[in-house]
Length: 321
Image (cartoon, rainbow, N blue to C red; front, side):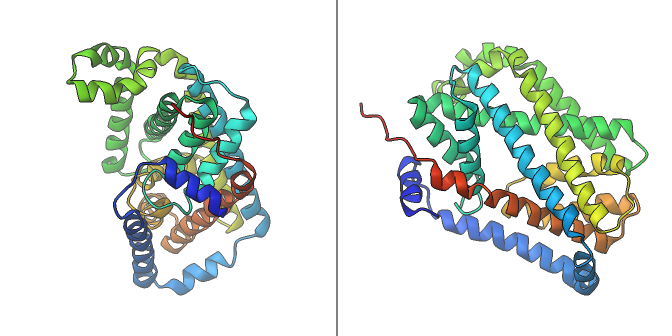
């Protein structure tokens, strides 16, 4: 990692109290959860299953994950245009991969998002709009995740227990209601207390123009499909016979839980969710744990590809006032 890059990002971001403590806690919690699962269910079968993974399928899963991040950069470009921030796709791609790589090492909950906002904002001299585009990108991705998970739960209501299906559908309906009510929420912003109005005003253009976000939503749904397919490929590499349809159902629901900022990259949370969800559709518990660990490894390797962009992409100088 370039020392000058790290220094510039640190200088550009607001100071935070004890950031490494949060990083260690998240990483440690993930390791503890995985360690407990391996201890409780016996680690030896899991390791034997991991050794069974065929390299070609693992490489294909990593490649698909990296391709999904390229698509995510395109989504970010579309959302940035809503607030008038326009740049070449190559720049958005480089900044997105810088953020992806930074997120592996910078402690805190939003290290990668903060990095790409700073890179884009300094490049375009529009830091506020760049921050808004990153917030919209993250928020819209979560909304699409809820929608896709709810749609798959509605399509296959008998595949999982009703205690999983019903909350998933309700969460999707609530996310849809929030999206449809965005213009109303936007009109209510001026009536909020001044601090809240100023804070929420940064994303006001997205609230006033939800239709402009439809192309980004389509990309987000395609992204969710690609993530499920990537994990299905890992399952094929392990010799699992679980059909793709069940991956399309279980993976988005698991990703809802893994997206919570509790552990590093969802480590432990995802494996636990897989243990429960895939267990309901007949997958062995050792297979489920191994699948989660393989996907964690695939995403980590995919994130490391951002080192090229991190090294080759300079951070623009901060504009003087």
